Image (cartoon, rainbow, N blue to C red; front, side, top):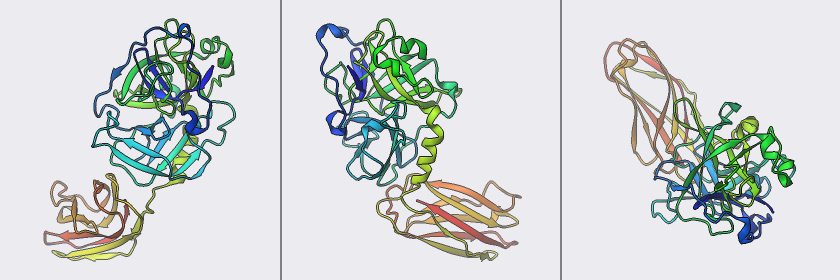
Length: 381
């Protein structure tokens, strides 16, 4: 039986999975004993921090943080596009019962426009109610990484038809070309070559994604050894069976659509800007404010864009002050002697501060001899 994969089976341990009844999709019936390899081997526990952007979703799927607020997962894991506060994302841990886990609710879902048609359109975005302070993973935008040996990870079943896992597992699966994948027959004849990637041990099986892994990552490494997201777990026949590989959404084909949809969601808090120019006196100080109105905390990746005209930028010290009075040093008066102007984008970790309220940019001239002008600045929390 073909099943949406909430699936990540390594023959001994597995990682990602089929949504199941929670998402209104059909779930494969447990197979007969002679339909499955007697052992599932190849999975190992993931280390804390090894996949810091991986997400466990409450409906029994996986996902990946592609921005500080947006999760990429499988379309079959979510209902229609629109407001949705009913999904819970757990992240920041390998143990789902870790007391340090981060748990955030959703506030909006975008389901791929073609979802429900050919299986290749199996992607969706979930916007969280607030940004989270975790690294993100880049999406492959070209096919250069769509071959080789891939990495999969998730909390799905460790055996076909088995329970999902408490601890995050990982494994490696080799690429299988489209022609060979389709030669498996049955549902594989409906493979959409430009939109899907197959992976697994063709002859022996034994390593795969499984029930509970849908939407989780298929990864490769770039020239610098960093992970790139090249797909998400979609479907397969059983788990880890010989000549029945796992099938994954091919991110390089959908990257333009995914990134455009992510951009359309935008940040939850609208960026705030102050475009009123202010003179910066010699040996003086000026402050400029913006007001933010949105629920929740600021991001661990709070962005501050500052544009100042000044003939000697080494004179200036620049701070961001949160609504509660906490000060974040953006620029010191050292290290840039002789340079002019300040046109910079700074990042601060303000994750434990309320986003709503008045934020202040403070500029001090600490050496005599020159004056300048604050042109404008923008805050994205």
